[in-house]
Length: 287
Image (cartoon, rainbow, N blue to C red; front, top):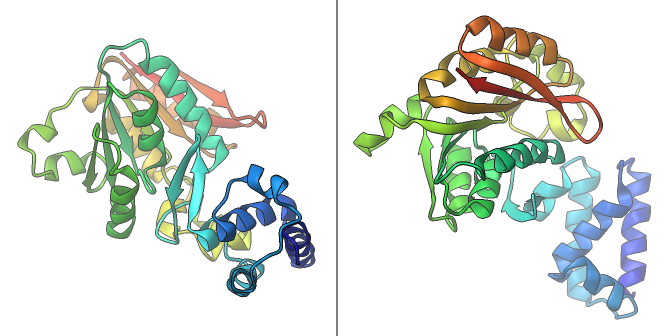
């Protein structure tokens, strides 16, 4: 079997299993088992596959067909051009969150040596993207889940300008060993918090509801439990004119803006849309 035939077979199997994007996922799996980039697959499409690789691939293909997300199957996800280790301990980074990162980088480039906080860091995706693109920034990433915290530390280890703390939102600063951690005025607070209403989680795609950590999804009865806390507590940790950028559900925009305005702590609050034109990011600037 050639490389090209191998990929076509994966596509056929994935299509029969009802996988939404069989072509792109087949390419991801092929790159993983062959330890190569996508361009290599095109250049070597007529090469013969090694039998050991085919055997190892069968187990991974079976995992995906049973509903395990492809990112967990191959153990990695790409976010903002960075490959991150992922498994069931953390939410899979998504392209929608790149809108938040893009806005943060654009804003923070205008500020000298910015201090940034990434709440609910999960895999560390947001912190890694900011640290990689703004090496002069100092980034603090916090995570409540001890299991996710361990994986975030692995992903963020290459970035010397990132500190990873474990704790509940801003309480992680007070619980840190560094006594200076409790008093840091931040230029920006970035976060992709849990925002799915508890009652709708079971209606999500099987890849999400059966495999991604509920703790990273469940935002309480209306999906806004953590969002309310962040909106109310963030001003204590932001500089004057500091920025809160927070991912939200696509039907939560109006209510989230109202929460920010009613808090009386922000001079402006608006919703940024994702690449699909849906409400996705709260942008609020502290008074």
